[in-house]
Amino acid sequence: MQLGALLNQLSDEGDAAAALEALGDVILLAEIQAMGERHEETPGEYVANASRRFAARADDEDWLALMTAIERADDPARVVLGRMLRWALAQDAAPVPVAGSCGCGPGGCDDHR
Image 1 (tube, one colour):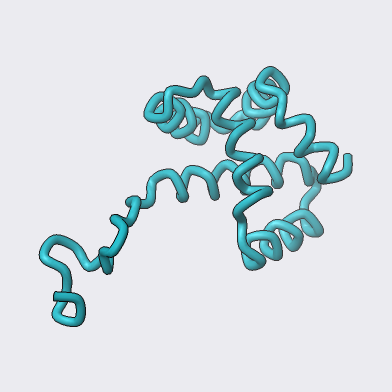
Image 2: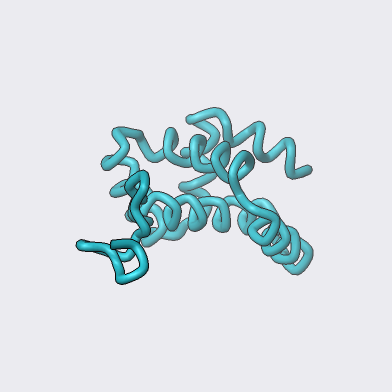
C-alpha cells in the first residue's frame, strides 16, 4: 500500500478505528482513548485527525524518521500508523505556550522579566 493511500484510508473514522484495533497495542489504545476524551473525539476520530495533523505539521526530521522506519519494517502500514499516533500523542501532551511567554515557567526567567 502506498503512503498516500494509507493516509487517505485513515481519514475515514471507521477505517481508522479498525486500523487502530488491528495494531493490537493495548497501551497505545488506552492512551488514544484518554487523549480522545480530552478532545471530545472517539478513538477513530482521534486516529483520523492524528494522521491528518502529522501529514500537515510533521517536520522534516519526523518524516525522515518515518521513511527510515518504513524501509526497515516488515509491516510498513503498522509502522506508519504507530509513529503517527505516537507523534500526535506527544504533540497533544505538550503544554500549549502562552502568547508572549518564554515558556520558562511561572514568573519567567531572568532573561524575560
